[in-house]
Length: 184
Image (cartoon, rainbow, N blue to C red; front, side):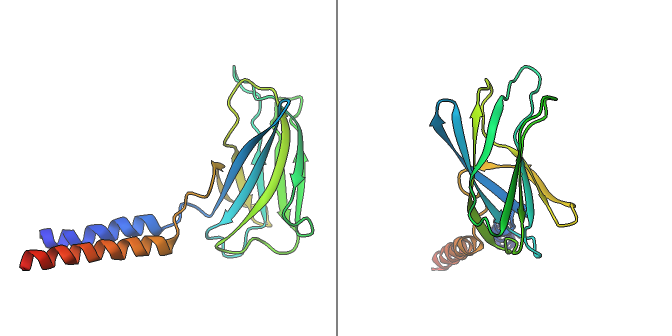
């Protein structure tokens, strides 16, 4: 019984690491430009939307409770391919609604298992709450929500399947070596 579990357990761990966490992910870096100005640089990754990723929105927080998210002058400062990706920026409104960075693929969507960086947005921030992860939504062309989540700092946290397979085969090799040493 113990020998059977010894072989099954590594495969279960390996499979749990290889399965992607979601359909798409948006990672960011946040840079201070000085004088209360900041810039987000976004990278979007399509992990399993077979038809391609056409549309995403990133939301700047609204004013809420005692925390003050005071964003203004939200402007797109870089677009990796302006002939294919159209972006609109909606400023926070007087009704305490947050701003929106809205991006649509005009011709070619982001293909399956691809990433695209260089979507940059600058803004002025005079809030007293920490600025960081933002809520996002991914849509299809019929405005159906495909994925929601929060942007993640730095690189995409989903491991590469090839790396996980290499680690798994190494684990199996160690198990085989251990068995061989016990017999010898």
